[in-house]
Amino acid sequence: MTWPGAAQNCPRAGKRPAADVLRGAPESRPALCQADLSGTDLRGMSLRRADLRQANLTGANLRGADLNLADLSRANLWPANLRAANLRQAKLSASDLSGTNLSRANLSKANLGRS
Image (cartoon, rainbow, N blue to C red):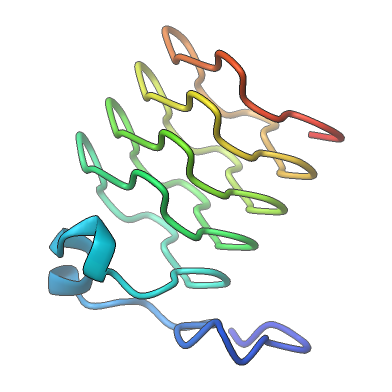
């Protein structure tokens, strides 16, 4: 699936990134905005400061993941598992959180505007 008007700074728009891209060091990881991460097992993964704007995380398992300062604006998280995830200061504005498991998740200082 390709997002309409995919931005040039979203090299993985509509694509499923390879596992090694996801496991790479956060500072060397390319933008994952608009990427297809649906159903992906991201348990305990460090996605700190990750650019996940408009990413498709439908059914993804992010249990215990570190999403501190991540940008999840307009991401589709229905119905992702974010149990015990660290979402401190994450941007979740206009994200679809319906049906998302957020039990024990750290949402302190997260931006939940229009979510």
